[in-house]
Length: 323
Image (cartoon, rainbow, N blue to C red):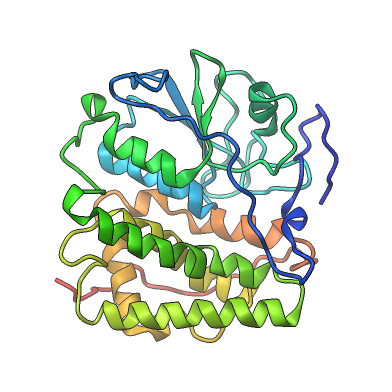
């Protein structure tokens, strides 16, 4: 991966810049952290047609934002552009793809690379270009590229323009529990698969993968008692976890060496994953071809042949039995 920063669309820092001295993966912090608010007090007032989401269907972080946009019914209020699944040293690109849902051209500026949005927002930006990106068409800059904050905004600040304003993924009475779940699931599972897959030393890998599967076993036990993570309501915590689980067997087991067990070997987690996948509108936001093409072709140090596996065969519509 190149570390070069230039105006030619090259990604300014690949994931290899995030490897510590002991071979452990240390994810960079998101750079743009402004907020859209319903009352406009932040300087970025919620409005229909003002904001645009740039996402990858492969990326679990971007898919969070894509799904919340869908669940809230914000398709007419917030524009969307999908980048190409193949990500080389030039970064996320706007170009026709070769998979089931191709990448798209940039409708706002005619950009070739998402890095152009970062450099337009901050000409001195020298980090890794990531998705999702919430772009403001009025100020001409990125508002936020931190997925956990973007989904909170989509959940609460755009209700005046949502077709499903009553959907609340972060209800006040469950916020403490949701936050506690996120505080463990994010580092140990969501990021844990990356800490396993990107580790460049045996010790770093074994530490990450052991922590990952301890956390999965914890959830397997929890879901023996509850339909969803907080009980009988689907919340933000469930959808954040789902994005990792739906990618686990197709990608993380093999590509990231997370092969102690598969999700299909954990009966409660597997049924729970199917339960979430079968919720209305969710399957439309999951593109397993995008997911596999992205991971298996993007990390040549992990998969130098860039051969994309055919399997696994998974029946996502199998009855989940968690009613």
